[in-house]
Length: 100
Image (cartoon, rainbow, N blue to C red; front, top):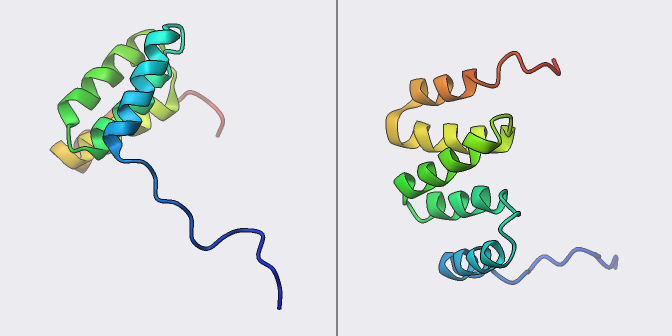
């Protein structure tokens, strides 16, 4: 019998409220960790709080306009709230950045 080094049963992730509290504590202690706002936006999105998520992303994208991860999350939220066309428009910002 082969021993699988990767367990098939892992602990479930902590509840979203705990995750949000952790990210907020990190951000409070390290204000220069601006990318934590993207993770907070993801938690807000997963909590069905799209408005708060978009606000966090807008603030982050204001100072980091080339963040592909932030634009991708913004597009996912806009797709859920406004539809695929809004998501496509959000991602058009990234077209022409190179790499392809």
